[in-house]
Length: 113
Length: 110
Image (tube, rainbow over the protein chains, first blue to last red):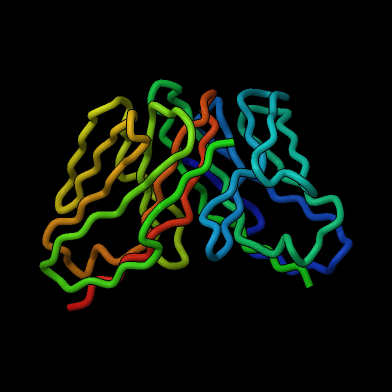
């Protein structure tokens, strides 16, 4: 199994509070991703990183920011959480540019009240 | 932006039957992926299709890719209950930027 750890795995917070989700990998893979999963929408790309300090927006990036200061860590921040950001968040990594296969973390369930 | 559409979204089938899940994508992509997700779990990679005409098979599942039609199929042969899960396809927008379909929830009834 790919070495991907997400934290926290579960979090309940209130509207307007900041939240940071962490993704940590031990595979030394170049690419890291944050997706959110909601019923009826599949997985939607929030942001991804193609190297240290190199990030790009996905299809649902509004309200989210990311940072990657080290190869192994990719942080997703909700500056001011809203109820619409209640979701399951998955981190993924990909190392082989030739195949592009993604390996996923276990997910972080976030509830914004 | 790359749009990926799967159909059907829900599929209930009897054991022993065959069926096909379709995945269409909106813009050119030479790479297509299939993933499986069990309830409450993460996603696991099933197939990686990297060129037009690519066909991969694993057990009762077979995936194919037609880049000219922008279509991939996941064919299930003689379904068994253990195949019950949600199946996702994903396409590469370029630069390893992957977009997913909404998923097909498969329920195989004994």
